[in-house]
Image (tube, rainbow, N blue to C red; front, side, top):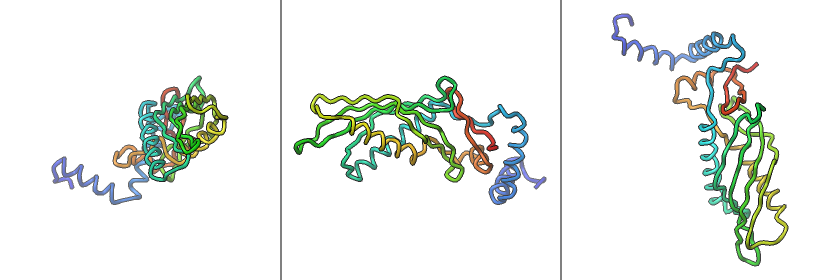
Length: 204
């Protein structure tokens, strides 16, 4: 190997690293052991903007699934925004806006709905993904120029659907095509919520 050019050496080490699971685990363990001495230090963090982009993708996937399944709720989510660590708390606050079509006398009537929910970001080590769980409804707004009935059941149904969506569709997943993120996925991880970002740390 020492007679090889530098690029060939790098390629040879990469092939060895990829083909040797034990070497990958030892390397990951060594890296985290070296940087894990300081409990407040996070080797990798994800910005609020990145999480929000993944959340919007999850909302778009949800809309496609709703359309394909022919759901009777006919819920369309138009937008979603996230705030990480408000007031220094370990939570995420999500604002969701959309429209529900209600069936009334064989006519579908549009109802605009907006929800503000609060939940806890949770890292699933098997999926190598972050979910928002333990959701609570903070605020809700339901408006319709056409429907004058009781809209509370609409809010309850939408909240249930949004909670199911967030608990089953990740707002972030480690990119295993990135060598750094792939290495992080090899060791026990947890996440810590900080204002404006999620920090990946060693699990205790």
